[in-house]
Length: 287
Image 1 (tube, one colour):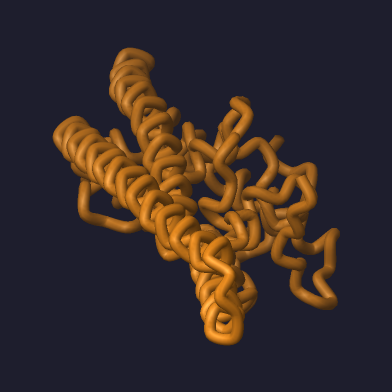
Image 2: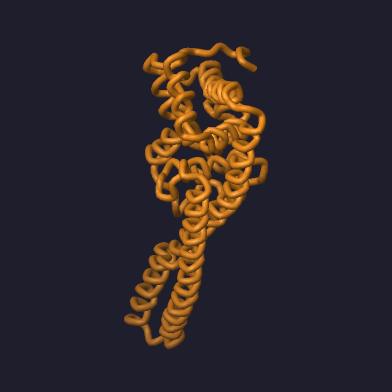
């Protein structure tokens, strides 16, 4: 497609980045192992059933946020067409040239050319305004649908509040980490947006730092392996009774310095690991 992803940090150690992503996944496996040891088979099946219900709703939310993002991109393109800065410059330049020629000559066809340009400008503006209004309504509809589904998720699982950005983070990751082809990129890496909507590299990097990696880049070594497994474990954790959730989290924090969260906390994990607050789990252990 000719897109250029936001570059990886200079001097990034690929092996270390892979290892940290793998540790993040394995810590969640440790949590689930601890959970299984504390619950009967029937109790664990009940947790899995609740998580499956959440997963189905996450799929619907993933489709909704994908559609909302597509509507957002279309709105950006339509807005750029409506503002038409390049076209306006060309039209104004043309009108000035025609006015100058008309001033020095009596050629009526030159004047007619100016009328044609003005008529086409008015027609283009009318069409652009219609398209922009249509895309604004579509974006508003998608936004309302998305908010409604997030409230449904909060009703089913209070661990995912509708107004919390971390909830939306998980939904976005469920989209970009899934098996389906993503036709509307740029949810994380703004350098994948159309030219008229791209921001600076620093702004794009800020969003990637928020997630801990560029999940729209298949070659970013910071992305944890088997993301579907991490997301599923988080759904399991989210549906564990709170008292047991905290007990296991506290135990793992005491043993390893990290207790897992039902929310997306990969960047916080990496920062804590960098600060020496989390125990390293070597690759190959706890598979």
